Image 1 (cartoon, rainbow, N blue to C red):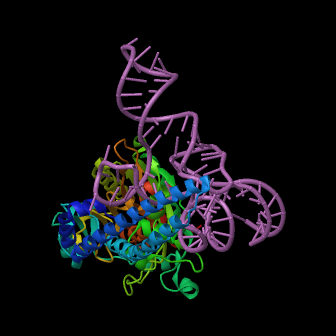
Image 2 (image 1 turned 180 degrees about the vertical axis):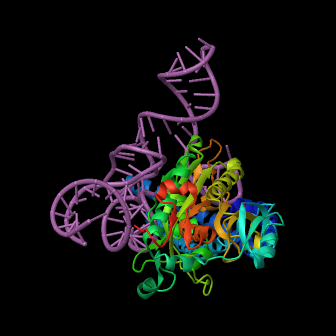
Length: 443
RNA sequence: GCCGGGGUGGCUCAGUGGUACAGCGCCAGACUUGAGAUCUGGUUCCCUUGGUGGAUCGGGAGUUCGAAUCUCUCCCCCGGCGCCA
């Protein structure tokens, strides 16, 4: 959530931020109105309680000295009835106050392009030599501001065909038992996945990240604090009869790990590499990417997460972006970095870079990773601070994908399949133990 | 799941209905050449922040003039039993 004191002092900042996000900024006026009513009530409640407390003390003294307390008790009763009324009123006011404040998004960083639609994300930079079909060249060049290098190819392969031909997947039977967007991973594809996970864990360990696997379920309250309404509604599975949700990313349990803690300044930054299963409802994605394992209800992901001092977060955003780029470079997957425009940004992020890989068969760049700086927005909801003599300071949090294993496998299959053979990126061979996946010579 | 013991400031803990003890740690100041020791103040949150203001003793509800304390309920931790990869 946002800083309420800052909102009171400087609502203009929030009007502008919401306007740029194409959101209804009149809720700010509504908030200020209801907040002032809440504060008025709170003052009154405090005054009445103060009176009650002092009379209670007098009763205590009289009880000890054996004096009569009946009229003092009556006085307290009348204070209590007034108090009751105002407190009840304040409960509903506070409910609305909290509801509204949770809808106010983070303050937009000033380099975020103000626009709607993914097609208006701003190209930042690109890398790699893409395999591009003739009919996709225009799209490729447009997507890279004319700077993209490529080789023209005649033929591309869908990852679904490749997986089926090479006996790497069983989609039909998964659908039979679990429904759409589930899959059995088989044979060398499973080994490739494990290799990607091991590679990612090593990559982050070597760069000062402690690596963890979080609990795959967290309580609803924690989900609420770690993310926003949109994510909760569209992505999160709830466990029936339990107050638990399946995580949609390790970001949430990792962020919440330090909930309600006061850190020492010298403990920061804390860099965490998280490996976890991710469960997503994909509500609202009907009809999109229905084939294969590009968009599924269950996948695994290696995530980067940083808790840091406020003054360091923009530097760390660059570091996270660089890390993900290095991983893609090491796999030789062509990619571009885009600065996600204001209309497509989630409420938590002040700024977000998407890193999109080139998918030759789809003929376009698709999201592989997403790096966000949430500033103090997420940490404030989770109440994570560091100790400071003049008042403890809310820290900053950042998150970014390192390796989305399923989607990365799609990228590898689309980019490196030739004559029915999948070629494994060189850096992964020590992890897979094989350099190709082909029909013959399977394990 | 059952039985028992617990949950109190950053930590260890006292507190069986009447203003939340104490110790340790940490921060600041004083003293000191410096460090240590010592002393003083501070070390959760809220409010038109300085006021002999309010809240807070795992969460929520209740009884009471008044609840850390009594009642109900939920959560979590420890031990034992049961089950078990």
